[in-house]
Picture 1 (cartoon, helix red, strand yellow):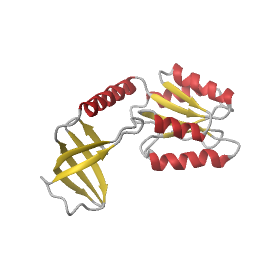
Picture 2 (cartoon, one colour; picture 1 turned 120 degrees about the vertical axis):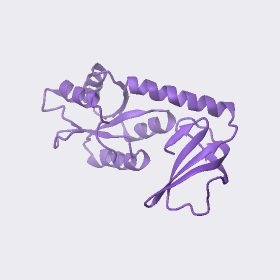
Picture 3 (cartoon, one colour; picture 1 turned 135 degrees about the vertical axis):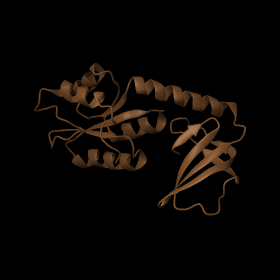
Picture 4 (cartoon, helix red, strand yellow; picture 1 turned 180 degrees about the vertical axis):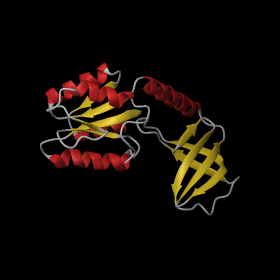
Length: 201
């Protein structure tokens, strides 16, 4: 789902949708992460646009239930709030380093959700309606833990940028805490970017 409104939904579908034509009636089951409810909505196909191996469908919805309208309004307000105050999910098992990075992000005007493990991060994303500006993942002593979380997020949330915290190679979406004293400047530069932090994976 790439677009959502009270009166319609935009869907990106892999492959063709040859059986469908503009005007066809459809039924769509919709669930937003963190909302917990499934909505079964009726509508009709308003537009079909093919883009290579994918197809964009625009579906006009018929009379939607009040709780769906409320959900869409809440999502809009949440997105506007997150545009004003960027939300960052910080994943770091090292308490002292996590506190330092979180404080620097907060000083730069971001709202920080702190967790200490990959499982907590996944639960936070699945169970809450977060509009994340980025997920900041610190390297761990067992490198596979951080790498496994990054792999999961590339599939589950492909357009949520990831920032690496560690002593490795410095890139546009990399923070170094242990060897460089300019953490606040690094974070200020990331938060101040007009483009999204990092890039879609």
